[in-house]
Length: 71
Image (tube, rainbow, N blue to C red):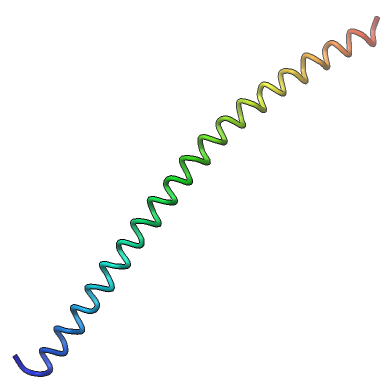
């Protein structure tokens, strides 16, 4: 193997190691984002339910207030 071939092989191996490390970092980042998305989606669903319950309570109270003001 010539010196140029050795240098090219070394450069290729370095690139391959860098690529593998970047891929692992990407996979980790993707999993973290996926986890955050799932958590946020779940929290949003809970908040939507709470907002709906509060809206219903406001409607009931508004109806009661309207009835009281007509009396």
